[in-house]
Image (cartoon, rainbow, N blue to C red):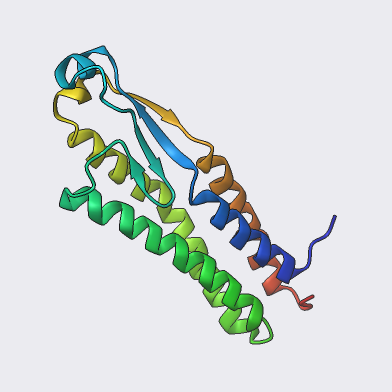
Length: 159
């Protein structure tokens, strides 16, 4: 199946939209954390749009989840805008390349974000177990589709 450039862009936007409620990482609180905080301490989930199981009033957590949400929403809107301005090939190409740079920086961001959450977990951090979430699979698909889109934008015909 050979998707058009506009279909590739729309696929990226839809995948990015789907990533908002999905977890990227999940911190499972172990026995030492439950001993420290009590048995009702929740596990921690870093989703595309928010974080669950942490106090979002702490400035670092508050900034991190909002920043991530803003960047994902920017990615979705700029991808949809690229569909509208696709005839302006250079601008569409550069905008898509910038989005790829954001995507490639995401693992570093997620590493820092997860590390900040872990460091903010006090006594629960002693035996927290990290699990990867389904959002990372969609992230990889978005990267692949964005690379295919850039290749298509560099070619001579735009469909």
